[in-house]
Length: 321
Image (cartoon, one colour):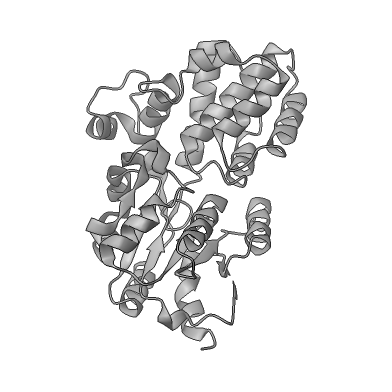
């Protein structure tokens, strides 16, 4: 656990949480949805079979760029790049992985636009983009991804239409709660009930997994970005501005697990000409990717850094005032 000692944490009146990777472990749900969607589309639409390709390792690398808070963006970028590699006769798995490594070193927080720009410098990708149709409405990537994640029943509830590709158990079932109810109770007491969510997932998906824990949050102030316009996605500061305006907040702590979360908090701070928000980065259990994320949080100046969201009450209660 790390924190800046020159901040009086008692003066902050609310705490805002991201959900995925902070309150919920999504490795078996969202990560698996990315993998299964990539495999499905490569096999069925491009006749490409990649055996033992390290997709999950690349998912982490994409998230660390600061432009891929949306997992469907990550899915699209990986499919686009793999199909392009095949087009230029890069067929070996190691060769394709090396291509991704070089690509990821060049992209920035502009996400899919950055990926497309780098690929267009190398060759023509227009036909592949047209075939995928992303992010236009009813594109195949979003459809397949959401069918895998939500399953038939929740898919109908969220999108008001029937699934076409997947009719088995939803991968959202694999969500695993990280936050303990005691942690939420402690933080609710400390912040006088001012607990809020700003998440990339939908309200239906949040309700499905958090269930009764949602009752601790100010529901009318929570923002679920999947249900909002695409341009409001992180690191756009729209959501934080909306929460601050609605609750008339003077300041808050934002808790997230991604570079997008950190960039959003920093941009909001710049836009408000002050330190109205401080950022707490959650880097996760001890893996190579979590160690890299911790280093990135340190490098980019996160105010608080914790391994687990349940460490936050101890940080706030034991910091020097």
